Image (tube, rainbow, N blue to C red; front, top):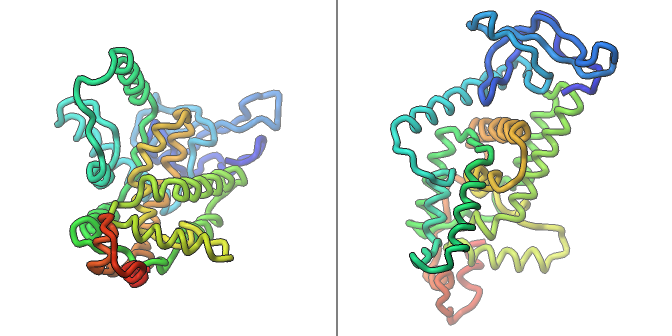
Length: 327
């Protein structure tokens, strides 16, 4: 988005325009200031959606427009495909209230989830739970695009850790910080206005913060916690300013994006902010999918018997030997 009073779009320009959650190809027919008496007021644009009747022509604010670039066209295609898939799923499945999220994130949750005892608790507590649940489902939903190859990598990751008792070799060949820096470096030149660039940097900063705070609480499988314990002790004892963002890589970052819908649903963002965040996060997952060969581990490390015992809380007669071979 350009500063007030400036425009990065021109009459007759071919653009992409958001209508709800989908980007449509459109053409700018006219533009004007939102306040005719104030030449510094923001612009709004009369757009015609390609393939639609003129009755659908609409005046839209600049933040609904995107440049007609290859990256944005790919995003538009992916958003449309995701919306169609969601519509098909909704029409073929019975209506059941269920918290949104990925199959893989649900699998990790079920790995450690403890079920409550039915019938326990007061009526007020149950009523409060119902109110909280209803409040949760009225919040804007976020379906972040997760390309097929990232979904496959998530499934492989889950199997390697939980079934094969393996762990990702750490430090990762490319840390979360490095991956996000690479994306910023590539994406910044494509941003057409200072506000658009500010949004990008704010979102990436938020991803870093979410990852740092949620790694040990949400993203790790039980089998990885011993590895995390040793690494944490190491980076806390060293003088270098190291942390999860410098040690972990693409596998755990992708797990974060799989759980993002649940995390965002717990915020109080309005619909416009939620849709913009969804767009930015989806752009990143598409980029990571294209560059997955550069960032994901090609193999996992098999844990020793000593490590397996430690991960289960069984005392080890030779402390340190198991985890030292994993990190």
